[in-house]
Image (cartoon, rainbow, N blue to C red; front, side):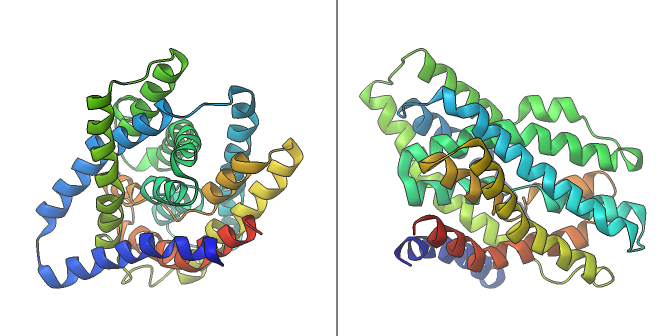
Length: 298
């Protein structure tokens, strides 16, 4: 239970973000600017700062990433299953399908840092850096015939990928930043968690998915319950243990990424239903993530 209680401050920040959005009326332009600041500056600094200072076990990286990808692939297969039984517009289905396997990087790094410190952030950062291109590729592929987006350009510009790659290369080179640079990165890293979680809360929406609630409910269960079980099975098969086992299970248990909404809207998809799913998985994870964390620490 103590491990689960450690996550309460993070979820309190999400709820604070929702309250600020509702009562302070700061406007969409303000929140868009804050999200860009977090996404392009603060979170890359968090990743570089954590990875550079952490000793990485390269031998364990392959089974770790294989487990994460297997969990995502399981989400894709389970997301395809209702297509055989539920009738809905193809564009609506393609938009919602991505919510079965995409993940919220802000919550990922916040939870990893809260529970395991810099080693947790570094391990989660490796998974996030590898999984972001994969998630984007599959999501765009499903929506591709309904719209156009510069996929490879977006992947190449993704700051989470570049932050992870930069930290990883500096770590391999044995580079340790001088004290002033460490302090600078540390200040940015400290700001990233709070602001990132507040923006997650500000984006919560629960007024969509009116015509596809059955499919939406299925995707919520897949994302928060089925994927962690898949990760546990695959991780056990690969012999993962300790930090790597815990991090990959928590990665699989994350709520859906807010970027799923952006992609659906940019490609002419059903943004309203996707926004509902993002909000439902985020709120649901306030119960399931502490539960998985408590189970992992038993």
